[in-house]
Length: 532
Image (tube, rainbow, N blue to C red; front, side, top):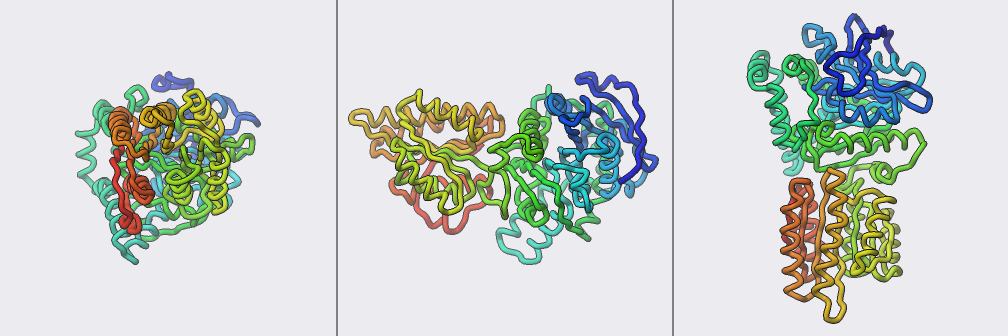
């Protein structure tokens, strides 16, 4: 690694929101402004936070305060940003230099123990470079990547799609090309500087993030150097993109990596992460309907995920959420997701649960007959997938509430809930079906809202009563409107046949992921679906 010099300085006025301790690390004549929170100890491992464009360590203000309850937190302004030096030219901003800066910070603040890194945007890109260095696992214990791909992996992915084109591969490459069009502008010599210097101001940036991603303005902590940083950071684009796209050098890493894939990211399509498993020995991944600036928009969620991942790597605690996100090969549509299906002991519910499991979900199956639920779970597990059986009478609201609490406690918040139970009690078919759907939607929908990273609810009416179907349909349309701002989709399915039910469910899920398989298009069915 590199020798580095540390000298203490007074905390600056811009960081009085939390008790950052200002330090300086020097490498190769470049001074990096580093900000420390909490103390280092054997039971308080170091977490290093690395920002991207156009941010500084201020990006982590909300999240750092939460992490510091358990860890020694270190954030720094990468070269060219904030209070760090801004060397001239583009060569000083190439990825090997940025990775060396990260190692200098690590060697200074945790010389004896490996650190855990959480990085965003260009911070993630340069950390990918760092974990690809031979022996990186001795200095970096884990890496959580947020909206910042490995540039070499991205180059190989692009070349593969253009070398062996199919309609799907070309559509994926075109979609990513359009999303990345701004990076071409950013590499021009004069135009981006003029545009950014006139158009990007702190107040406008805050309004734009609020409109684009619903970011709470109170979460946005921009540095006084923000306008200068937007221009200085352009050197990252000029120094690296063309070089890596022309001459990729993909390397493997033994560092455990967790990819947070934001499926509403305006700059990065989720398809570009499909090959990560080729290069990472131990890979985790979680897809959420969130935007690019997750550290600003939902810092509590990101801090919680980082904590669970770190503790899993340390071996001090287990997490079903992290276990579910482990990738043993190519990512499947619902990998890392938790699905709950009521009435899954037979028929539509049973086949729906099996289909969700085949697409990668961990499935909770319920039925009023526990033996039937266990039979469904056993069938799913016999194919190598994961399922758990519960006995549940959906007409018992107290039992339903206790079930939702137990699922959340044991497995985490459900990502997908299928309210399927067809309750046929004489004289009460209509009321029971509608009320069961309302209860399930309310209990699990509220948990999705509280978590803050979206989800999906599917309400099924398989009873042969038009009034019941109409009631479920109207309720679902109202619920969809209420939950849209939380990025929670709601679908209402009224199948006449099991084939229609499967088509309805998977059509909506595949549409949300951006494609529909040909085999699915051949299945008959109808559904009313909404997505946020």
